[in-house]
Image (cartoon, rainbow, N blue to C red):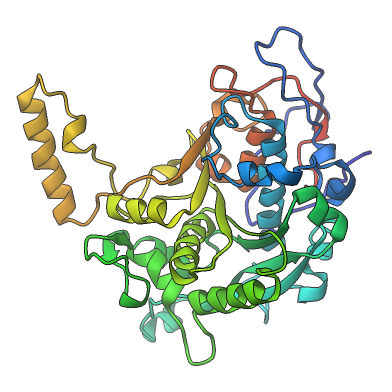
Length: 421
């Protein structure tokens, strides 16, 4: 099977380097690797062949959704989990491909395809899922009117940001071991979304999604995008809650059900907020898991504690060379992590922590982490910030990742450098 080379709807250049030879790079399994568990062909993981080639999860599905926090599956990376991570990554790719990035278009910042054909039009014809709801995010930031006179950039406050899809194919439901609901969210695309990203100070959660403490805080801009609304467009929060309630009512009492929220960049941050909101709002919530790619930090340590208490399972795919995963704010170790034999170090840390806390910039990483690195692949542009953050880079690295001692298997399979996933 040959993958066709097609342009992507993401407004990024390809993350893959362009050597002077044919951009198809091929590998064969090497016998010298310390762990030889990573030989899934990329074609096998292609979305159009999910139905026949994806691994059967069956009764083990909860393990791959993180019921035990993916213990024993990440290092070395289990092949079934790899396939699931890539599968969810393809759902995010569909969100990018469906988004209208053309600022000169009358339909800018909307979805280019109807719900009924969205997945088919974006390369996931045989996924077994059906889109049941489009999702929009609204920016709380409003630019003054004079900006329009000096800038030609569109100022759409509400933009299409993703979708909800429900697995309806009986064979796929059997393979997965349950009916799965996917919430897929794209990354930053509009000017106002970029402005929201820059509102990096922490703010407490509103009362309707609070965690019982004023100390439980999240990033201001991400929260704004999640809860803001206009007269014509409900908030992302309202849309997610409405659709989750409908899905639970339709399927929750009849069969095993899971909610899988996946996103890249900004979408990864909103995925975590959505997961927390679902598990804290619906007492009869099914298992909620997050698979995020290149996500920034979202909240402080109190927010992390509430996530853990709610039972939300989060798997963050992190590229060590991606600067976005290191912002916003700072992660300051707790006092009990300081070396007791060096009082002056602990004192300095306490002083520094207080300064950063006063600035509302002390964040905490959440969930479990699968760490990959662009430097381990010979096929990626080195030192390119955009490349390190690109979703295609993440999928490429996950496909080749073996373990922390062998972070990228240089001889795996054959696929075009810009293949349509």
